[in-house]
Image 1: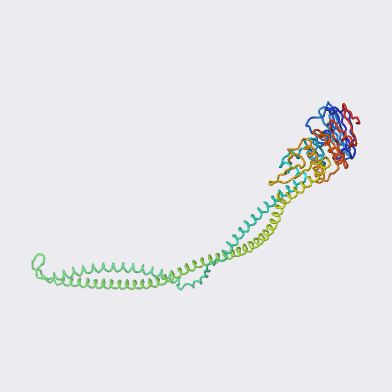
Image 2: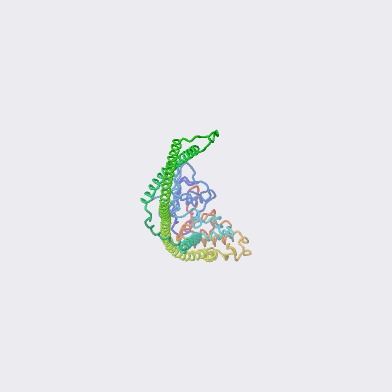
Length: 542
């Protein structure tokens, strides 16, 4: 940032102060304590970032205006009562401090960034030397842009973790696909059950159903006739029994007529020829009736026997036909069962065939997925190797360490050039075993910074600070910015002041260096391009 003008109204002691700065050269600003000389320096961060270095407000009344021209643009901040306005000419006017700060940060970075490259106070000058071994390392790495390596390393590590996770995921997917393919292949290797043959059709029945029905009807008729014949036999047997009784009675009566004595009373019986004849006729009639009854019985028994024989024949024929019928029905049932088994087997065979086709498709798909996953795994493994290599290269023990060593060497070289102008001190910056930066001072004390005098430490501080200026400019590509120095000569003796003045004069060859000092030695006045004194809020040429 190259500042060409600072203008203050109502800011601390300044009622209307304008400081015009040359493009190059050393500008010396002196004044008594409290005169407002440091306010000219504080106006830059106050206007652009809304913060003063000392942390106090610069407004001295209800109204005020701070204005800084940098790189051809005038930035301003004004106070009207409790309202602060900000803007730029040419450019927009912002309603809030935040809007101006966001704009400035985009152009020049943060306030800390500006301080590291444009401000030398006792605290800023000693920032590097007093930061300690670890702090110095962080400062050097920050100025050298090591954060980019950190970002790259973090990005590479994140990418490495992601790719490792992807590789593991692909490997798990390959295992899953292999298991699926193995199960499908095992299912294909199983032999399907033998198919059930279709049963032969059952031949037509050998039995005659109408004939069986006819036999049933004939058997029923014969049974009915046999019942009638049986009744006739029973009736004939009744008649026979009665005829036998009559014959027996007629024989008794006839014997009675032929006896001399009555069998009952024992008295002599006198025979009557007519009675004998009548009894004989009666006996003959009853014997004839007996023979007729016997004939009727015999005929009825013969008829019954014939009907029984015929019924047996019909029953045998019917049993034969019934057996044929039962055999045919059994064959039909067996055929139906066999047909069901055949259809079930056919359905099972069709299902197995479809399952086989599905397994074949599953094997093909799994094989394709496996090949694709293996190709993906191979590519991921190659990428993993590349990212792992990049992670190792970007790690703190690789390029970053090399960058740190080269940067320290460059800082020490530039700092020693400035120390050569200021005196005969030399510094060395060494990376310790744990990566910390050790500061060594040669030509004073015991080689340690802590063993140096106040003036020696100040020269070392300024030399290192100016070297870091150069490093920051080289890293950002923004060279020639205005440098502000505030009370950096306090602990220095005359030769020390002369040496630092000469160094600042060398620094001012390609930029403007503003030096704020309570009192200025003659050696400093001798190299100043412009010298002014702040007196009661006004600038006076000194």
